[in-house]
Image 1 (cartoon, rainbow, N blue to C red):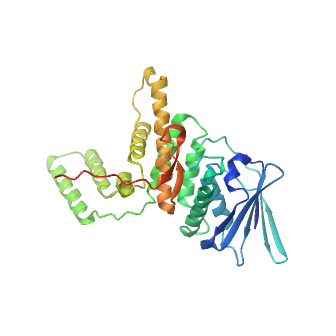
Image 2: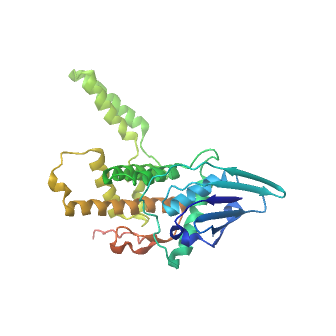
Image 3: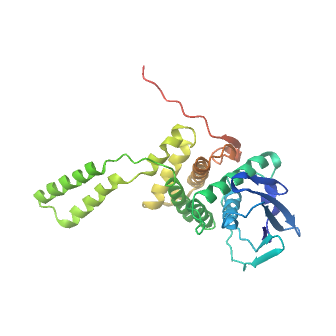
Length: 312
């Protein structure tokens, strides 16, 4: 299968160009080359029939490592003498500004970027049905599209995407449904005896219903404990999400250079939070761009697990 992406910024693709990426779990190999100076040709070869909807999964993985909403222009399937070519109409795209999980145009992290691409491709292929885009890819695309707008819009889109991606982290909910049900029943009876009106009673019951919901913090805590998520970056997400969802009155002083820089620093930390959760989901280990550090250093994932103080 050949896939062509026209009018690309070649520098962004450099770590993937001319590399042969063996996807053993999918039974195929991928080779990416440059055609006509700015077009990308992606060739997929396999000794057996390619997995269903593999072209969609490849686009998802490319969007992940490039942090861009890219669209394929042509897809050509060939098997023996049979050739089938599909032409896809150009789609209007916005100027997005999402940072990729590994930001480098040098060769020093090429192997890591290729491994990251392979891990994500395998993940989205195996974790969802062939007819649909993977939920993780959907959340990442929403964050990418939000980055084309104002800082405020980017912040909300990014925080919502992190919440969605975190919901994919496996979690065993140990909440006892019967206990919660008994609590709600007891509270309802108590409010009835007090003569509380139905409007307030329904609001209180709605709040009690949240006892069975799993918080984002509960889901990611084990990642923090194991060194798979930087706690300071998750705390930045909590700050930005609270401000975005529950805005308060603002003053002109909040828009000075210092406060604006603090906002950008927190956005960069949330980038790290988002990508580290995806690393944990797909089982990636290697270098990544730490946007929470000065000059966005390349660092190694997973991190060292935080030490806990033991009482003597």
